[in-house]
Length: 359
Ligand code: SF4
Image (tube, rainbow, N blue to C red; front, side, top):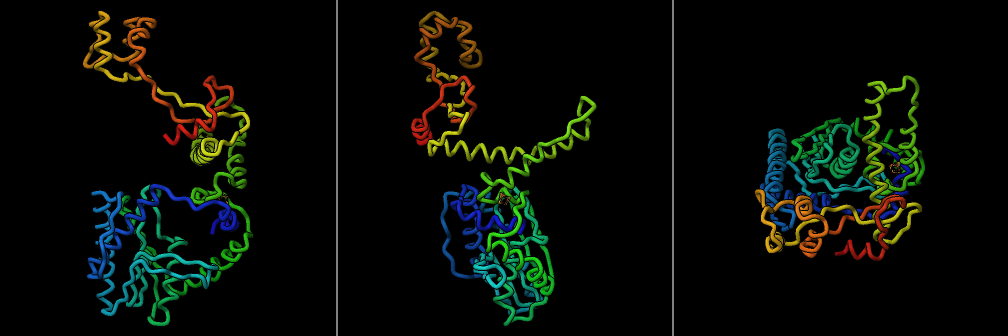
């Protein structure tokens, strides 16, 4: 809705999954099972490595809230239609558009669409939420012939951030939005037309690392007009802090993208190289170190525990430290980092980098 050409642009990039997405899927499966059980429907308990006490508690909260909505709806209508994990087709408005409603309840003049969000990074409001409105359109297409629906209630349940957000509209308002706003944008999107428009939504876009419009917008933010006086005014500092968040997100996306390509595909970026990140030395085995130091006549080597490497080196002197303990001190491999060529560290060959990542 915010950047119509992104829909086609995104198709060049593989669909990404993440540990958070997998965790969310596990939470949805568990929530679905619990809700079905609570409604006396057949269901087999799913298994997942992501199951935890927290997930158990959060899905219980979700089920409790859903049962509350169902109970309230029952007070006005005994003949409720309750659908769990229902495919909702809104292709009448968006070409090939569909989604899955976690819970859909209909029967009392109101259509309820409920969505579980397991993430906790961003609090998602149901207010004018296009995803929820699309799902509501899909649900409406399913039931409008069977029920007399006047109102649509959309609820997002995001239990990990204690967010229970509901937005209600009349069916007329929803259909009006679909005709006036959604359809024209969907048409533009399906043709790859319209203006690129960068913003907060870019974080969900698969093109975000290479998108020129996003780069232009962020670089625009940097064109700050510094004038007299010589020192920044408080309001200018505040303004820059406001820009810093978006700039750092963008820079971090670009850095992660470039580093991943350098490590995984041996991509060379002009002026940059791969190096090992900095790490600290550590004793390979403290008991052996203590024994070796004692054998060499050093007794003052314990405080609460064995003294640190720096202290030990100071105590023995660099040369003796190397002779006595050199074999018993190790330096873990550092995380790979892309740095300017002027950095003093030795460059790592891409093939070596790949091996290091795999191990
Ligand atoms: S990154 Fe942002 S501006 Fe670029 S295509 Fe995606 S949504 Fe649009």
